[in-house]
Image 1 (cartoon, helix red, strand yellow):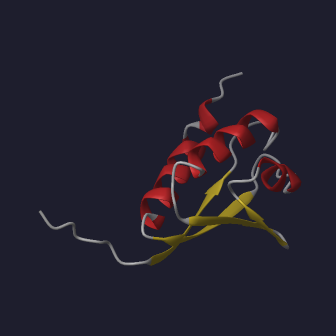
Image 2 (cartoon, helix red, strand yellow):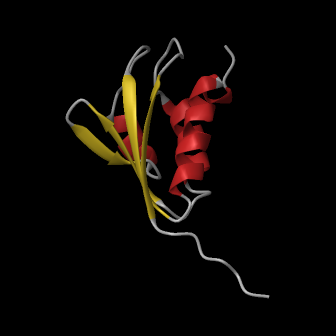
Image 3 (cartoon, rainbow, N blue to C red):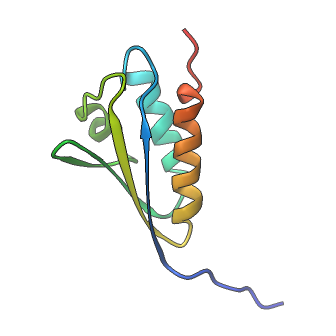
Amino acid sequence: MEKKSQAFQIVKGSFIIKNDRGLHTRPSTEIVRCSTAFKSEIVFVYQKHRVNAKSILGVLMLAAEKGAKIRIEARGRDAAAAVESLIQLAENRFNIHY
């Protein structure tokens, strides 16, 4: 059986942080956990910062507060799925319930 290879993709998206405490350690850990499940390169852009979404220190460096809009740029064969998953994670408040 022949496998069909998906084309290389560049996908962009964004989300708004809904958590009262912003991107602190727990939501950042969830972001990294989600991002590392994909092979694509994933970058977050906030204000003038561009960080690797697979790096806990990078995500924490954003110091994004509630209401911040984070842009996502993913490059790779599973880029669309990566962006979709990260947006869904943000919608679910990074699986954190205070």
